Image 1 (cartoon, rainbow, N blue to C red):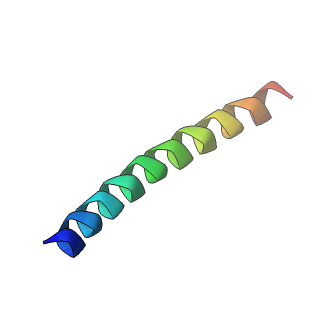
Image 2 (cartoon, one colour):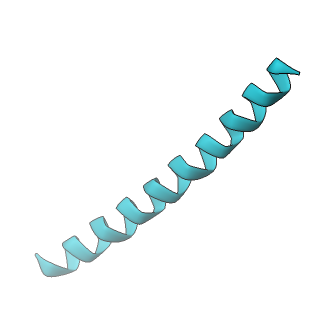
Length: 35
């Protein structure tokens, strides 16, 4: 059960990281347009 819980938490963390990466990517593209 503990391993399954850790697996779920890891997947949730990955989704959060992916969302942060996408946001950073969008901001980077916007910054390029400002240059």
